[in-house]
Image (cartoon, rainbow, N blue to C red):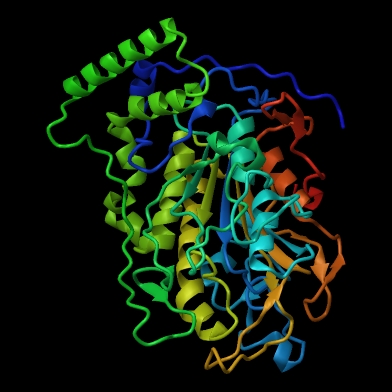
Length: 485
């Protein structure tokens, strides 16, 4: 690999500058690690291009390529499924009939129909597609995140891009991905980078093990179990106000007292192991009193016409929040469209896709494309949409669990959606074979997808991050997908 890019460490951000510039309460939304906003970090990468952003729409469970963006209308019935293709604005390009708004905007987006990796396991697939690395890390545990895991793409973006203001450079919303058994999915965190480089998780969606989809309007339960699914899940905008009885002046006095205590600790040599936590705490409390972030996150107070365009549901609210964060200067935003396995359509696949999953996705993504294009941000913002794998070519039925058929896990090929960020719209990169089982041309790997994101962020291919032993770790393991540009 080439020599690492030289690193310039940014200066600390003062509370005064932070409050003047606008920011978010990290305490209220559960972000407890913010060393990347402080001096002393050795992983900030030198930018060679203007600041750019990435929005990664992650479809946990795995989207069926046959029923969305890589339809096989000439295949046998048990492969092509129930849906039919429709024409898009791009001549010769067809997609599912239940994605009409995206079909009208095909000049803004492109597809890679040949991305492949070797696993059909949910946890391994999450690790691969959230980190952009095909080989699993040493000691990989599918039941729990480990400190030896690869860092997520979000964590890498947060560690290697310079923050443009006091906001964190990488954000994940509206929730962490948690299995219905309550185990946390690996691949989302800082891993071997350390927990202080976890991305900022905005927890706006309370955990519900059986409520999937874009609640409240499009919520569902995979197996339609009576008495299990209540559909009462609420999208909770974080409370960014100071506690009742704590005025701004009182808050400032508490900060001054905290600084005095820290200075005394420093004079007595009581620093070291707690420094990283103290830096994180100072970053959090210095932003708590700033009201401007409420406008960024409290998307339910947007204009009624905006809410209608995006949809008054968790998918629409999440994409609105992503739009606001990018406009505010956040470099990388990962949007989990649905909690863990929302897109895992083993059964009831066609009614759930048609009635529950495609309508809010089509609507919100079309609105996001329109807004970014109209505000001039689409050229500098790459949108990527993928799951942990695709689905099997053959329609299957598991009658012991589902009334109606669906498709099983399939890592061998999936279609990945790209828009903006310098990519050309209306393009198709690669192809799957006649039944959508394997790549037939222009094979791409998760490493190529990750490299495309890093390139869109303006990161040169020599970018590294450093571990606690000062060892460099290169972030590029492949070239970006050239056919998109």
